[in-house]
Image (cartoon, rainbow, N blue to C red; front, side, top):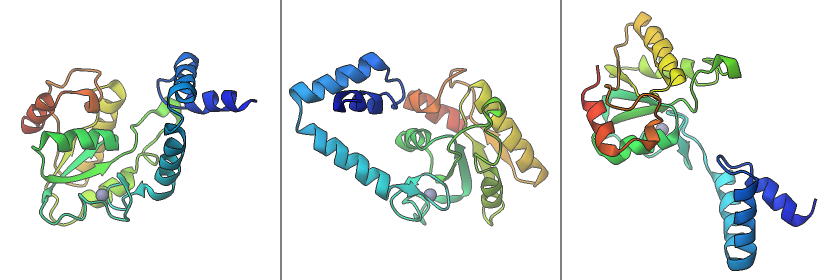
Length: 193
Ligand SMILES: [Zn+2]
């Protein structure tokens, strides 16, 4: 493969980027923004090298424990379960949630071979059993898989005597949390049941 083909193939690994978009990006960089190329390469290398997962909540973090988990001012009675760090960021932007998080880094999808082990269910249950946790808020997506994930986790929490709630409706069916507007998320959070 030529260097151009290799670049296009690498860009195509990004979500939502097909052949045409990858070509457009590659040509743009080569024609108009050569300076961005080493910057992109360095940023990718640095991110890959330094960003790990928080040992406590599994979100992306450059430190063993992320800033949220390390913040003693948060409300330890609340633990919010989200699918992705992007969903967590969306909830943080609403400014209406002050508890801690647990990031699944996925959702149950038996057909794709993603079971409870892959989403850290055991770690979540252990975290939820810690002293002080009074409510686990299941903020997985309102997609079929997100709903199924919430259902399985709610049942596992229930048999362990841990209260769980689900974000209220109002978040459109089928939607990924990260793309929902902040007001709707804040409302769904306050109306959880
Ligand atoms: Zn954390």
